[in-house]
Amino acid sequence: MRIGIIGAGIGGLTSAVGLQASGHDVTVYERRTESASSGTGLTLFANSLTALDSLGIGDRVRAISTAGCHKTSSIRTPDGRCLVSLDTATAPPLAALHRAELHQLLTRMLLPGTVRNGVNAEVNGDGSSSLTMDSGRETFDLVVAADGIQSNARFRWQLDRGLRHAGYSVLRGVSFRKSSEVNHLSETLGRGTRFGIIPLTGDRTYWYATVSAGITASGDDPLEHFRTWHDPIPAIISDINPDKVLHHEIYDLTALPLTFTRGRGVLLGDAGHAMTPDMGQGAGQAIEDAATLTALLHRIPDPPDPRFSTTLEQALHRYNQIRRPRVRRMWRQSRTAGFINQSSNPLTVRFRNAAYSVVPSRLLQKSMAGLTQWELPTTGSPDRN
Image (cartoon, rainbow, N blue to C red; front, side, top):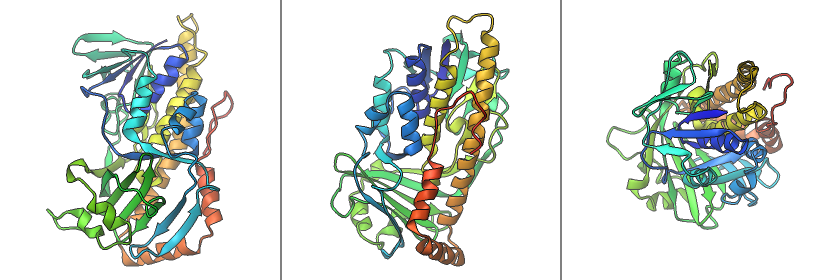
């Protein structure tokens, strides 16, 4: 099949890698003039790694990540008190890596010329499989819209239900400080504030800081709020280059689209189910999307035969059946986790901290293991997770 993909983010590129390896003719259109070379870190859990394995690229991703490194992780309070401690050697697999390095790896796995930068490709509102660009219109057998939370395709296909501000913003960056103090994954929960530390490869540490609206005065540096928190947070902040810090308001979709498909078009990643980062599953769910779509389209013939339209329609219907219930669960749980962990209400904070401190770590590990399970789709009944 001839497949056009809008967006060269992680979801779009992973889809391109899987679909091209399956024998499809794939072109990726990216409106940015250059490939991503910056960014911060991300975490991939067991579900993401399993999905990457199904595409035959899991080991290559692990090789540029911290997968296999035995570390501990914890949830703490600003004074350093440990609420939860987990041994990641016995917890579900987790790989942390730099987003730009994953982007570069995926790009290198594609045939030269697959990604066309500086091209603004737009779908047609009727769901037909053609894209309009400055150079004219191109027709495909399938269009994959992986154009992010502000998806123009979602809007033009009349599937958009609006965006919701999550009530907080996040600052993110990478520090080149690495010592025994930071060889540990952690999230510290304050009142309307959080600070996360995730070691990367190459003596680097990915950090993030969240601040609810109204916590700091306008014009103040939000990171000043964290300088009195436990070690090594002040040391990490002291190493920060302000020019390298990303600062974004956090949004998710107000509600998921009623369907992820329109004609011969399909929404993928944040375009279909943008969620808050509170479960660390944004990239992971886009990767699951890509692996699912690749598996469902694997046996569709090229060139098409008279049964092609029906076969593609069935594959897209199956994609919607599988993915929508799955991501709806993640979307809801991310929103709930953000509400609890980002709370600035003193009573809620006290209850939250008390609950974390008494829940056995094995129950948290079991819950995470269930959440991060993923299997390659079959032709049977849809995933009801």
